[in-house]
Amino acid sequence: MPLTASAAVRNFPLKPERIGTQTDILGESPLWDDQAQCLYWLDIRRPALRRLCPATGRVDSWPLPGLAGSIALTDDHRLLVALPQQIALFDPATGAIAPFVEPPPQPDGHRFNDGRCDAQGRFWVGTMHNVTRAPEGVLYRLEGSGPMVPVRTGICIPNSLAFSPDGRTMYFADSLRYAIFAHDYDLATGTMGAERVFAASKAPAFADGSAVDAEGFLWNAQFNGGRLVRYAPDGRIERALPLPVQRPTCCAFGGADLDLLYITTASQNMSEAEMQAEPLAGALLAVKVGVCGLPEPRFSLNGINATTPAPTAAQI
Image (tube, rainbow, N blue to C red; front, side, top):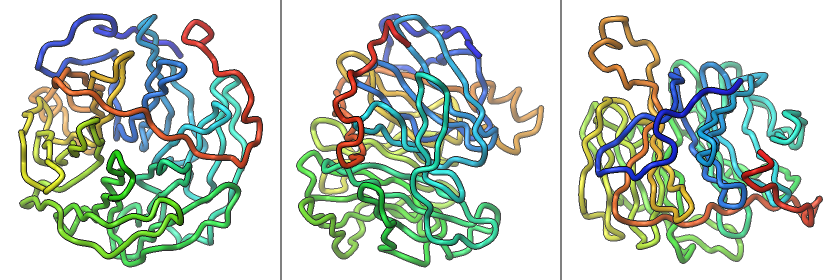
């Protein structure tokens, strides 16, 4: 279903502006496709997959068969979608979704949350209890058609998965620990080293989704904190960008020059009065921050349809 983007093709000031007219319940996992020149993201609670094509201002939405926590680009121009009991493949050309990998059995009430690919095309994704946030979640690594390998357990809310530009540092947050952790990372083997505290936050604000820019700085959405924080590689706060919403969820660099920062937000459980006071809650926002991002790695399907020509923006 197409929606009109209100500010899709323009020069953005250093102030977040709304894109489109849609209001997400729980916007998440923004992902820029540098080949097709479009932005994908999720509304986890609807549940729906959305796509913005800035060249036309069009926003498309597809319903999903379950709560999807994260997505990843693939090397055959589809999307990997983390559904509660299935890692699936979505074809934006047809709207078809097909099973790909069945994860280990999940306890009742669990779903996938944040996920991201490393530079070698592995997909890292964590699970969580959808309601209680009990420390029962698992962080998995997926290579090709699997199996999914459990790497960490005892997680409340997996978030902030990201990698340094050289691939040697992996970032990860269990949000209810109010910290982002850095891990030495072996890109050749996909091995995650011991954690060290990278940055901490103060309750009620906690680390949600992140993006790394071309200078190696980590941008993090502080849920309940109403801001984005740019952390230097040593964990120092380089700047904080106030937002017109209290619950940003994630961010991603996009645009032809990867110089536009897209931000997803949440309106979940807000009253009518709260929505009136915070009218941009649930909106997709965009802002120029003066630095560029990096192309998003693609999940490797072991060469399946890897030579399929990439769709152009005009074909979307």
